[in-house]
Image (tube, rainbow, N blue to C red; front, side, top):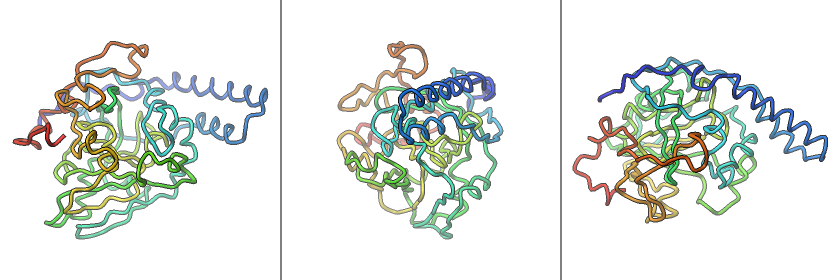
Length: 323
């Protein structure tokens, strides 16, 4: 695998602490004024408190093999502009509503075609391998993109612990579905719980990251706390959030978006500028946080720029048919 070895920008320089702490202070003051003036509900008070709560640090060693020369997306945009339909379909909904998500206690069950099924408490799971900080490109199917310093370790480390059997071919991820914590679960936009999947070789690829944090901190709820995966050469919806179960199987998983709209969302969903979504061109993208809403578009890279690392996984495949 060819690695990019450009010096990594430390987290402290990617987004200075004073920048987003100042934002939080502003929100705290604005929230206090609004509550006093208009008597807003207790739920809004809780939301404001959640948004301004001190972040929990998460130590990780930067891995220079996964550095990028591109400017990372500002923290406020990474945490404030998300797809997480369990909390609503608007990009701003998760940041406003995900304070209801309780990330302790939390367990992750790993079962199916494995030699040793296991269930991990989140605080034990996070310790099974050294944490790394990796800066990845992140591309959404709607045409927007980010550059994010994620924290985690390769998913392969976890899969090695449970030992896939010789029959295992796919890995299925199941996210939490709790309407009490996730107001979007009441909608019929998807068949809950959210499910995603990868081929076993994709799941074992060194780029596939079992992720616990970003920007030197634990994952905020709106970004998939307390544990998610990040698969940087695929569109963002393939990176399942708030995972409670990982199952190994010999059958192609029927994933949530593929079940809902198979003509639009294929199982592979590799970033491919040559294969358009029925409603959007995938040839270009707009980088979030790079200026105004009308910031110039840039060309989308094959496999999101990771072709040298993952292209061999799809050798001989018709990437229009297997989109």
